[in-house]
View 1 (cartoon, rainbow, N blue to C red):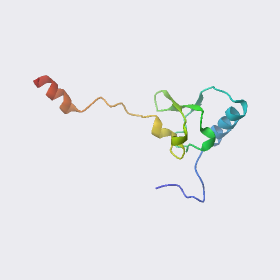
View 2: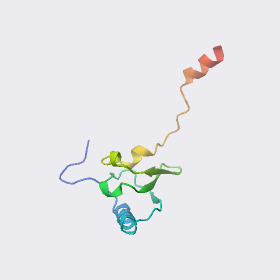
View 3: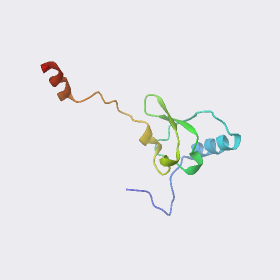
View 4: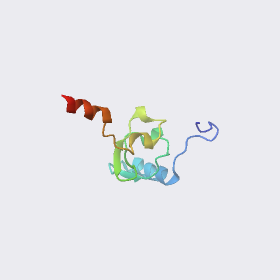
Length: 93
């Protein structure tokens, strides 16, 4: 269920401070964040964020198309190794 329009999008306050400082200084430094639940806002466009996936930090370059999505959508937490059926068909050949 989406967040109320009255409340606005959720952005972690510490992340918002880091983004504002990066915008003011025009820094190309990668910003580390653990806040996967934060919504991407237009002020974040053009910044590279390192989003933690539980094991390591995944670099995410924010573009205009990402505005409105959550940071966690761009750093997958699970590794897909393939379906078990694929292995059986390879053995038969």
